Image 1 (cartoon, rainbow, N blue to C red):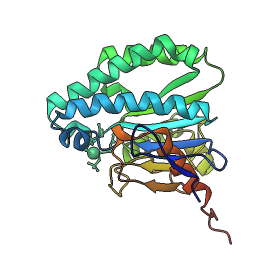
Image 2: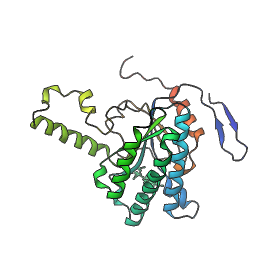
Image 3: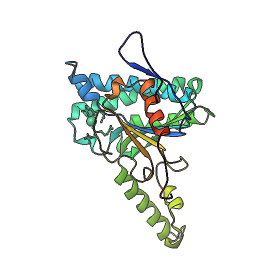
Image 4: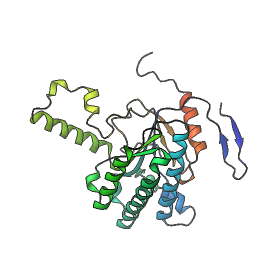
Length: 251
Ligand code: IPE
Ligand code: IPE
Ligand code: MG
């Protein structure tokens, strides 16, 4: 059972971790818009609050010894939103990476990007390049994989195309393709599959997130909106995860 005590300042229930921390947790950072709407604020305010939550959660995940934290920030489908909202999210991303570059080394956070980044602005591409360069200086701590212009189907499509190209150009042959090799064609190559995937905001669907990598992930859904997410919510999800029996098809 969760070890629960109410906190002083809010009605939030304090949940302490009561088991091991998975090495890789993934989060669909959803509910920014509804969080803002319920406060009479524009959706952009929800995205700004969500970016703040990400900072807090990434540091917390590092502190508890998690190795990889993958977050869904912008999907291949999110381009369907009004241009103004899309531009606002891209500006936030720009600001986030800019600020992160200055503190990554001290904070022990590596920042990777999963997704078709070639679809982003030149400015963002340059910041991503700088972050990847800075990653080389961060030898421990947590790796945050930010999924931008990411779609699980698009990732598998791109992997298939890249493998086919390698075959046509003589570097690979179809007979050698196994799951481990195909994994190397994904954005997540060299990162173990997430043990736990968390979706806040009450929606119970994957929305095209980590389709390949989630084959045996445990899911945790909560009604909490992403901007309201706290380290206690992470603890609650991990404690729930630790109660599960993972059989991977065996008995
Ligand atoms: C998640 O929050 C952020 C992105 C998808 C970019 P939403 O913007 O989807 O918030 P809701 O789901 O409308 O509340
Ligand atoms: C998924 O959330 C994408 C991100 C959180 C970045 P959406 O809000 O876009 O998903 P749907 O539309 O509810 O499925
Ligand atoms: Mg949403």
